[in-house]
Figure 1 (tube, each protein chain N blue to C red):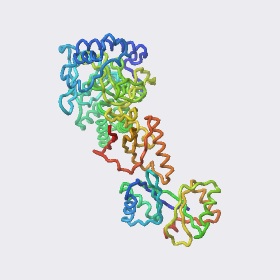
Figure 2 (figure 1 turned 45 degrees about the vertical axis):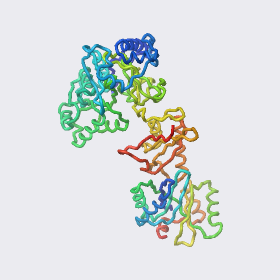
Figure 3 (figure 1 turned 90 degrees about the vertical axis):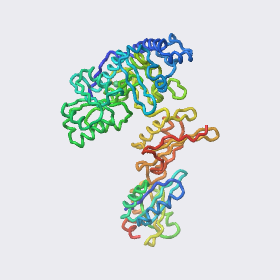
Length: 434
Length: 145
Ligand SMILES: [Zn+2]
C-alpha cells in the first residue's frame, strides 16, 4: 500500500531532535503537575524528586508511577492539572465495577488527540477524497469521537454510524461508497462475514480500515483483509493517555509507531519497575508530555509488549510497539527471570504452525524453582517413531531456552487433557509455596 | 509391498492402554499385531489391523480424543528356526539401513514367523530383502491372517 505521512517533519524527525523536544516537554509537564496535582506532588516528594531534577527524557526513570487505581481514587477531577473552566471535554470508560475512569481534555488536548488520529488515518491511506465510516461507539468511550475528529481533520467525508445495526452499516457502506472503516477488529470481522453472506463484498468501495480498542492478531488481520479485500491497520490507544491514536501502524504493518512527540513510551520490568532496553518484552508505560487537562506520569498499562527502535521502511522515526501479547498478571518470575506465556506460545507456533494448548507449571523443590511446560500433542507433531517425538521435545526445550532464558521440562500430553474453562485453557499454574 | 500400520499417542498413565483397546474392540476392530514403545514421558502404540479397518480405526480413535496416524511398514516372513531373524537383520545392516523398531505378529496363517520392520529407508530395505529372496508379505496376505 501507499506510504502517506500526515506530518513528515515531526513523524520523520531525527532521534536527536526528538530527544530535545521530549526533554523540554517532559520538564514542562512535570512542573505543571507538581504545581497543580496534589497526588503527583505527594508522590514526587516521597521519592525526593524535585521538578528541576527532570532535565532530559533520561530523567524519566526518577519519576513515580501512576496506576489505574489512582484514577479511580481521584475520580472525577482529582488529577486535573488545568482549571476546570479550561476543560472542554470529558471522556471515560464505564468500567464493570465501581467508579468509572474519566479524563478531562482542554481545547489543546483535543487538538493534539485529533492530530494523532489524523496521522493514523493518513498512514492507513486516508485523505480528502475518502469516505470514512466510523462504526466505533460514540459517547464517553473514546473510539467514536476520536476517529471522527481525526477523519474530519484529514478532510474526509465522515459517516458517524456509531456501533451496531449491521444491516444498516452495510447498506450505508454500499450506497454511500465508504472507502474506509473504523471500528473494532471483531466488529469489522462480523461486518465482513455478513457482507460475504449477503454477497455484496464486490459492491463495496472499501480500501482500508483502522481497527483498534481491543487486542488482535496477525491471523485476524489476514482473515479481515481477505473478507473485505482491504488493508487492515492497527490503531492503539487508551483513554487514560488520550484515546485511539497513541500509536498506529504504517504501510510496513510491522508494529505501531508511538506518537512520541506527545507521549513517551517505556518498557519496564513489571516486578522491579526498572526500565528495560528496546527489543525485550516487558510492561508498557506511558508519560504524556503535551497534555494539559489530565497529564499522566509513567502510567502503567500492565500490558506486555516490546518496543522497537530499528529504522522503519516508511521513514518514520518514532519507535514502534509490537502487538500486546499479555498482561502482567500472566507473568511468572523463575529464578529472577520474567516468563510470559506469550513467549512460550511464540515458540510453539513457530514449531507447529498453530498454537497447541499448553500450560506452564512452576514448582519449587529444595529451594530451587523449576518450570514445566505441558503441551498438548497435535497431529502435526505426532509420528510413529520415538526418535521423532523426542527430537521435537528437545527442539521445544532448546527454543524456549533461547527465547526465555530458562531450561524447561517439556511434557507432551494427550489432546484435550489440559483443563479448559470457557473454552480457554489456564496458561499458568504456580505450585510454589513461597 | 508395504502394509498399513496405525500409530497412537498415549500418555504414561494408568489404564490408557486398556482404554485404547476397549475403543477398538467395541468397534469390532481386531488387532493382528501390537507393539508398545514407552519412554519416560509418553508411549506410542503401533498396531496392525486389517487394511479395511485402518481408516475406521483412526476415525474412532480420533472421536475418542486420541492422536492416531497411519503409515506404511515392511512385513517379512522368515523360517521359524534359529538365525531366521538374525540373517535378515544382517542383510539390512550390511546396506547401512537402520531399524527404527520391529515387532512380530501374534499369529498368522503362514508357516513362517512374521515380523514387522520400520527401516529408516523402507523402499531400499524392501528391495534388498526381496533381491535376497526374503519373503515380503503383502497387505493382501496380512488381510487373510
Ligand atoms: Zn513505519
